[in-house]
Image 1 (tube, rainbow, N blue to C red):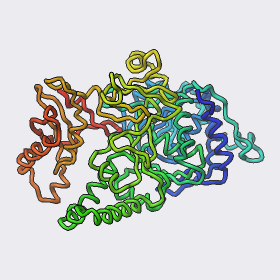
Image 2 (cartoon, rainbow, N blue to C red):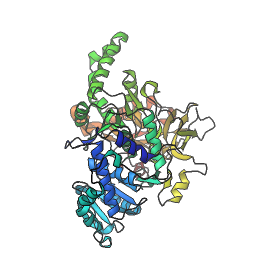
Image 3 (spheres, helix red, strand yellow):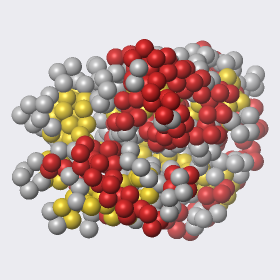
Image 4 (spheres, rainbow, N blue to C red):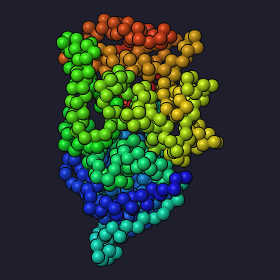
Length: 555
């Protein structure tokens, strides 16, 4: 267990950064300084108490990134209750299942989402509250109107409790046990069902402490939060760490299209950027590739002296596009396309790739960009996490990656069988990822254990590696490599935008894809060669976290 206490970290931070800006809504411009933020948390604590909420009770939170969302999350954790953040992209049926399965007694929800929920099908929820205007949306008859009464008398009760106003000296949060449950975060994995990951105070603290020690954020730094905070990655490093050190968070709160996102980055000028591969890959394909693909540019890039000048200018433009004042871009959530990674490394763009999973809240490995090794997923967090691989030679022969340490979850909520399947008696979490680990803890991921294909001659085939190469081919938007009768078939969703730009019609695609297969098979090992491409008409069905639901296409 860590010596630091999560809740007390925030008590100290709110006091020390009282007059500094804490959270801003990019769309509305609403800003709370740390003092305002602490005051809103205190009012929420009083509301919880008036409603009969006790430490350990579950509170569900469903909506996009907004100031009230952050207030409710932090108020719940600092009260000692258990937060259940739910991705707004879950369909209503799945969201209601999660609310019920988690035993949530209270629900905070955006009005637009509430319209599609059925309160009578969530019998354990005593009250549903609006994230938009803090009104009671519905209250269970058994609750005897506690929430409505609490809302009406909250101003008077708060004033009576703090007659001289709520100041920094008023902050007093409970001292929860470090192994106490703090959050249940439901996965939206590719296996077809959600599991409630139980994260303790210590699990969240491990991520926060690492962020503080590494100075990923620092007092007075700026952060643009555009990843969903209901996902462990954005939650830990776009909210929990920033609020622990006095960073100013700007909540983007809408779909992060490259155009809108680049505009916001230039306005906020963040000091650290968290990013998923898709955003970098879109910028690379739409802005960089066209600029380096002209005949003249191709000639310049081939000249050793001139290509340095060209790459320097591209890097400068890219850095400026991201706001120009960031230390690094941390890529996580999925593997970065090797071609994109190679180019960014070549131009010395300050990026690094980390590795994590919800079950670790999420961080497992990370390396600062100046020490980043291309193709790796960073170094296992020193002093916090340990890694091993289930192979005879873990540095050279891939095996399943197993992790143990401060960040590893308590288990899956009300699912002992699933917990036993991944957590062994010695505390090792079996990640389901295949890879290697060097003696210094640097992780290299090959693919998922469940997606690995065994070739006829006994070779391990990792479809993700083939897909990464295929996705760089002309007119391929995304792909899945599957086994059909001992042959590899590539399912491809075409890049219709590229087709339109180059006036390629659908009837031309079969011939183009035959050439794509030919080129692809030159880049892979003989046992990895794809037999043919099968075009699909619609995008692959995805989880709320935008991972392809592979199990739907394996038949």
